[in-house]
Length: 113
Length: 113
Image (cartoon, rainbow over all chains, first blue to last red; front, side):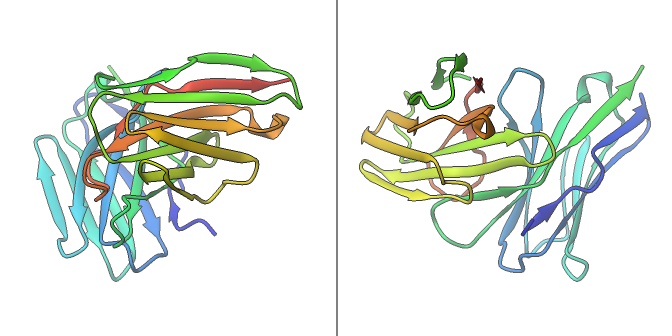
C-alpha cells in the first residue's frame, strides 16, 4: 500500500520557467507534509514543509500547495534554475511523536539552461 | 553531512554473509532512522530508534536488525545478506521526532553478489 505517490518519475523544464512537482497521498492522518531534495551521491536535504491545516506555504522560489479534499500536494519552483536539477521526494508525517516519514517514489527534475 | 556519518560508504558482499552498517551522529539527537532507497520505491523506512535501546520496526524490516547502545551510534545489521538487499541505505537523525527537517547521512551503497 503506497500511502504517498509521485506518479511522474521525471520532469524537464527550461531555465526560468515554472517547475511543478506533484504528489498524492491516501492517509488522511498525515498532519504535515515535507519536500526533500536529493543530489546524486548525497543524502536528501529538507526543502519545505506544510501543515495539514494550511493550504499554502512559501519560501523564496519554492511554494507548496495542499489540497486536502483531493489528497494532493504540489511543489512549485519559480523561476527554475539549473542548480534545481535533482530528485525531489515528498513525504507525509503521521501524528505520532516518533517522526516517521512516509516517502513517495521521487521525481527527477532536469532544468535545462 | 555535518554531524552525521555513515560507514562504510560502499560495500560489496556475498550472499549469505552478515553485514553491519554504522550511523554515527555528534548532534545528540534522540531519534535515528534507517531508510533504503530503491528505484521506483523512493525511501522506505527499515527501523528507527527513539532512544538508547529503544527501537521499532519500519515498513520493510524483514531481514534486518538494529541496535542502539549509545546515543551517537545506530547500527543496521543484515544477518544473512540477499541480493534483494542490494540498495542505497540512508541514516537520518531528528532532534524532536516531529519529522520536520531530518538530517540525512550521505548514504551507504551496498551490493550483494
